[in-house]
Image (cartoon, rainbow, N blue to C red):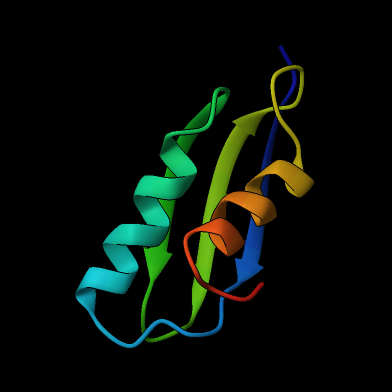
Amino acid sequence: MPIKTVKLYVEGMSCSHCEKAVKEALISKNGVLNAEVDLIGKTATVRFETDLTNEEVLIEAIEEAGYIV
């Protein structure tokens, strides 16, 4: 199971609720092992299994939560 870590830049987060919403959207995806969201840096660092998901799925999850990647 190959594992990859990506850092995504997320626009539209303005509070801790936003930070939590992005993290929950990411960890709900099959194959995501860990997600760390930084409100100040406007980033989400995600570690995932490449056999189960990919960057496009992660970006879509963030956008479906109402944020821009």
